[in-house]
Image 1 (cartoon, one colour):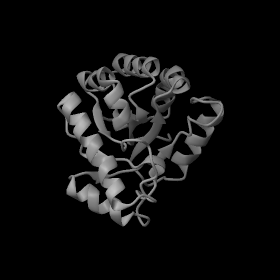
Image 2: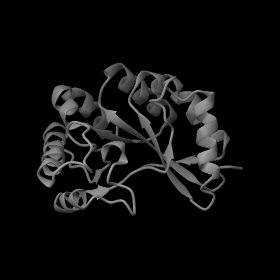
Image 3: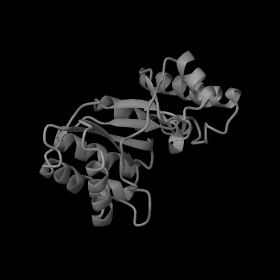
Image 4: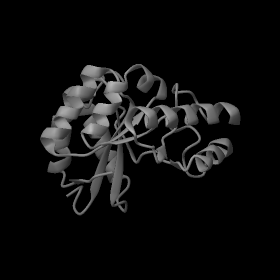
Length: 198
């Protein structure tokens, strides 16, 4: 089977809003007894502190996804520093948690072999590991969510990485993903994957 003796970690970018989508995603994770990672935007945490606290209160990891979702690879070092530092500070102030990872928006500057030197330097100064993902659900593309055509694409991404034993799956906090998440979790389990904690 596709997922025999393999595990996945579920991760969600661009939160913590929209709130209805977040609440639905959190409810599904609670029912399925899954812990996930949320890579949040500092500016949204500033506007919706209770949403950020909800993530942490339910036992999920909260991590840095920059302040304003800008392309960090093209940004100056000063701008990268501001984007990451402000996000670290607001998450810490709001939730009491200090993020340990940065997932750069679009993955820009974050992939092995294409690491952006300014991003590397700032991340090191802030004790942040730079992370990306192994499986891109493309849940943001029309039609949004994790419907049949997305599932086929996800399956082939798994098949293209036969030697990998653990996968980070990229999703987003949005209505279509929230709607399709229960079915997607069932599918992962049918494929034989263990859903691991971050």
